[in-house]
Image (cartoon, rainbow, N blue to C red; front, side, top):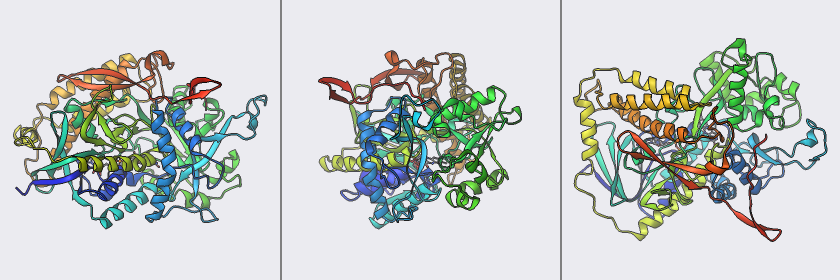
Length: 616
Ligand SMILES: Cc1cc2nc3c(=O)[nH]c(=O)nc-3n(C[C@H](O)[C@H](O)[C@H](O)COP(=O)(O)OP(=O)(O)OC[C@H]3O[C@@H](n4cnc5c(N)ncnc54)[C@H](O)[C@@H]3O)c2cc1C
């Protein structure tokens, strides 16, 4: 049968995580990458600002600082062993990327250049606890330059570099193949089913181990920085098979999306000295984060914008504020990262793409005027629960699903906890993509192919036939609009029990209507309407899990901010949520302890990273 393929390892997704895993696995066993997009169109290519690693090229730094910032940035919901691996392996991974040819920007001395990003700090060497508040010595920690970058096109360079290496190493690619199902037998993964977009035919991929690296699912929300393809297919399909999704209530809103469009203006804008300004011309972050100001973590900055808007200080009383990266503003506030005044040529050389986006999509030239911005749905901290080798967990006990792996944004290791720091996703892709690739190859070497069930493609076939055979009696795009609106309004930056309950009812009603949908195009060649309906179904399932997890977490932590429960509640919720599908419309929740590292100090066993209330 032409539509049957057999590889030791099958990787779904050709973003940074998938290709990094492919480079590792293919050194050891036969490996194929299946991707619905042409590989270099993956969202990793849109990443702008940088990739974190404590190289200490411009100032003192250490992987320990990076691990601490990651754990604190995640509001202590981070698994600490994983965070230490992330911070330690980051350094080696950056040099590996450099040796593969990634053209990083350079310091005058020829080292890899680094810039500041929110929440990345080091201890202040001049810290004086008795210094008057507001003085520089009163800050216990100060921003550090930790983000390695290629101008503001870092993800593009990573993706191109990894793809070139994959081609060089002979990885087999199935481009524009859309995974529709996982083949799970007796709790083990034995392959996947995918639709060939050019022909409409279903293909069966028989594998010893499968890695899901399908990226994020920001398309659940109305205003989003995410590409159209980011619909969470991997996690959704696993969830449909009864596997859990971890920490779904934590979705990051990036503070600086272009107003109404959601297109991202990287945090590098603020790392390089840009500031956010309200209607009164104030640098309002001074009020909310007196130490780090505009370089506080993203959850804090996004909430601050909402607070300003609610207080009537949005621009012209509206629901947006300004991001100002003009050289004169940077010089006026003294926020230049070099400590020296800058001119507009310098700004343009550091942020060329971002300046172009604003000129092209908004008609605003950031060199001359401030840019209207609002928070935009950006990053899924939650996803498929995995251990530190990318093995997918079956439940909250930590038992694994043999043969199934996940990495990148679709996974939850969890190194980002309740809120990810900027530049920590790209490093998560390479560090944990690499570990997953190694482990899935080891697993494939240690095991034989197991038989497939008869007709593993039957369920996908029946589902697709349903959409093609039913008449198109309703414009389904309107249903997707309803989903995106309710998620933005009721499950966005701020949440309440009442709003979440409304979202839960709306998602349930949308799911009912979804089951009766038909598509207009009944053909088989490049039927993008059919693909979008399949993707919309995945978003609905992920929204269901997100809302249920958010309703149950009656506390505020990181990106999950409940107005009816404004405080963090460590006594009840210092734990990861696991959401399982339980029947067609209900969700069952369970909780798993956060991984905490203990050390011996003063003869006593103590947590290495004590819980603290975050202050930036
Ligand atoms: C605009 C923007 C800027 C960003 N900037 C930064 C930054 O500066 N630093 C940082 O650390 N992070 C940044 N991020 C976040 C980071 O880029 C992403 O989290 C990361 O790239 C995700 O990588 P991934 O490999 O998990 O998935 P992606 O790169 O999104 O790739 C997903 C892959 O899965 C495939 N796929 C999906 N569904 C299917 C299916 N059903 N069948 C087959 N294939 C499928 C796709 O074809 C694609 O190849 C940014 C994100 C955005 C949106």
